[in-house]
Length: 186
Length: 183
Image (tube, rainbow over all chains, first blue to last red; front, side, top):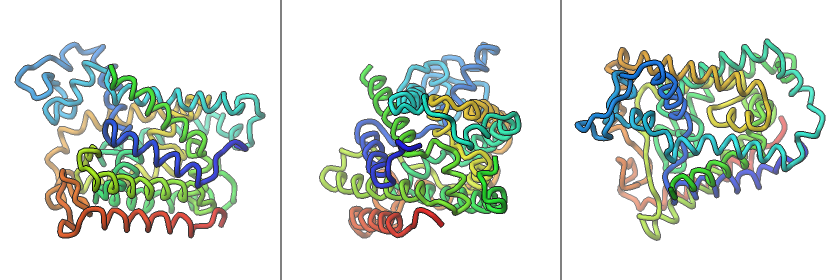
């Protein structure tokens, strides 16, 4: 943790990445790619899930209403996963890996919090939290990246709504879980 | 091909910055949401503030420089945000930071990702039953923004976009500066 940047340096670097993305390609978003991964796995077991369809705007159709929406936009990504948005999320994993090894964090002893995170109880909690977070993100049509950062930087009303709702639920839950005993509560 | 290269560079940079800033460490998010340490909030608000000034500054010079893409405002954004917030507080991960943390060797992040795949799959299955419900009722015309972007309905269409863009950007930075690290 000692190699963690200050809030100023972090904020400036984050802003540069957000700006580079919206200028060079499009605003950053992440959570849609979970649906694409699901679609790719599902498609392995069901050949009819995604099919080519010249009448659709994207050229692809799906028997699933969600994958088929917006002219089969998601169906197309399931059929052709080597695209900007999908590769982007795998590159994020790589970015984390590079940060981990280049800062020497892999050689450092784990903090108490990191040790506590390696327990069955913590894994079950992470699994349930992941399901809630991604269900919520898909219902909302975006997540912290797409709605909060990319949305508010365009002054989107949806971005403010999302941030307000996340904090309105997240703060009381976190206060209840972590404030009473003043530990990380893992 | 160039788009794949950009994906690797931008995604890699995004992940690296997330790691170095500490936002991919769930302890920091838990401390932010329980109002014990505001460092992450300061970082995020500063990033959004600078990005706002950058986006509306660049688009004032040449509107073609910025690829605006505004998401729709509908009731599900609020309901989804509330469900998201509960999980966010529980684990301290969001859909992006868990990917970065998994690259940095955190096993709990892998469980979060697998849980996320199930959550997204469940939504994919039930979407057709809720697609016509109030959850997807648009607010106004849907793609609403404060400032004009050329691809949205601007609530402040009467003023040049750079004015609300700059003001909001400065407000974000002022709040980021005013917040204290530890409470």
